[in-house]
Length: 145
Image (cartoon, rainbow, N blue to C red; front, side, top):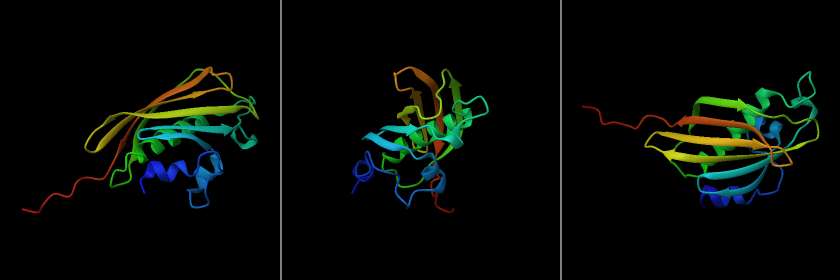
């Protein structure tokens, strides 16, 4: 079974117990999954807001990292990829109880590094944040001379 097929089984369902604890804490729901393209939705919970009563920027960055990383996972690459950079522009806000939708897409699939872009929008479709990230896989095994 491909990872696209696997992720599609979780569309509009709670995060599975086997997911990483932080992923479960974010509590996103998959909305759509294609190869290299993922959409997720979150409801802003009280632990995710800052002292101003809006969604914390670090949580927004984590949401973007999650949706872009999941987009990379749909490529069915043989190894796990990790973020080596994450650039986020914060352009809007959400408050407790609001629904936030994130989309992550693979823009360039290299041999070892994958470049992604992502965005978060509020319930009205207004852009809240935009991000880019490079994710890297382990070095290729090279024969010993």
